Image 1 (cartoon, one colour):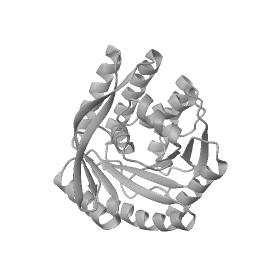
Image 2: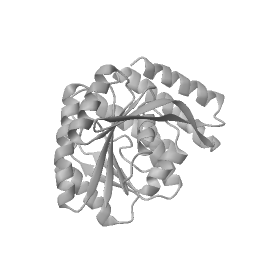
Image 3: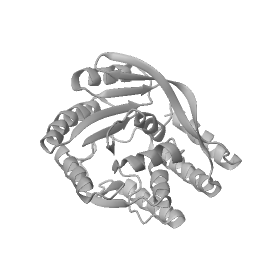
Image 4: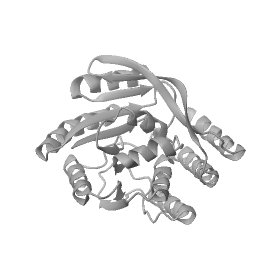
Length: 285
């Protein structure tokens, strides 16, 4: 079985790319020992020479496919663009700070495949050392359950494993481009009858703080949640809009492909205003 590991990256420091490279070497070896093959895709919507150089180096040395978007779309939009290149039967969405060990990652993959009848595995965080973030996370998850009744404890955890069916839901049924993408995915997956399982996971200590300041993060996620509530009530039709060109780096080869953003075709005025405001906040980070 082939698994695609998709890692969204923002304005990352060299230490983060070092962790990705180390994880790549170890996880490939462990996956092969258990009968899996894998591809690793790192996608970034920060188009700077420094970031381009780091990702090019990662691709040439570690056999990682790097995708650099030329428009700032956000984490959700970055992942959605990367999923078009993911060929695995399973998709793992993994944060760039690599929050779990390669060994534990393999255990979660095996757990997913051994169950055999699930579509999304959510690796929820058993312990969060940062008190403020823990409190904000709890408030957010209570709000989501209040509005959407998903029954999920941690909607925004940095590791999820998806089936092909869940990948299709992500690509064809979701529009959140910044931070609420995983919440929307889980809500839509529940609505379409997909089976979601949570697995308690011990998180490694993050090597860096979030690349988005916490005040802006709270503002964006709150506005996106309000937009999501409005969008789901309207059951809007989703369209792909070309917004630029993406650079796809494999080894030392570089190719150019279209870059897309998902929009709600008939979004309400309220949802449009909230979306545009979120995009403006993102552009200033």
